[in-house]
Length: 191
Image (cartoon, rainbow, N blue to C red; front, side, top):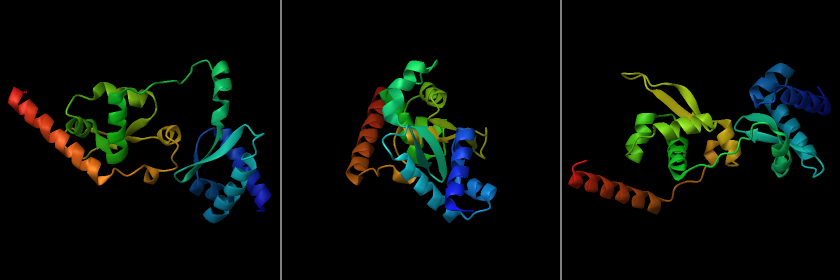
């Protein structure tokens, strides 16, 4: 298949599905090698890089998706019936950070790290589409496992979880000391 034809197929499939499609799936349906899909998608991304274009090709882990350029969001909001605007609270950001760095993780594991009930934060993050249920832990009670979504990656502008910033060692030590102080205070208060 010629590259211009392959670009057209990729564009058509991504437009029709309206969601991210794996490079592997695109290779399968086009009878092409993954490398050919990657090369064609890179050329397609360049085509969409023109400032006169309203959409862009986004790489999300091993998937491709057509998205509206972020500078056009104000116009989309004017026509959208249900605006997907949300403001994350500090509690939700903290919970989201734990899920992002520890996934797959159970709600109980999140609560053990945070030291407080996290039901509301986890439920909100699922509602916002930033985290999702990944399955169940093979343990008594079979608790749900949570992880981040492709929407999380898009919202925070990263291509994959590998692109998340690393926590500096000095901050890890600070966090550990703060956690130990909190535990000490709770023990002193009899909580």
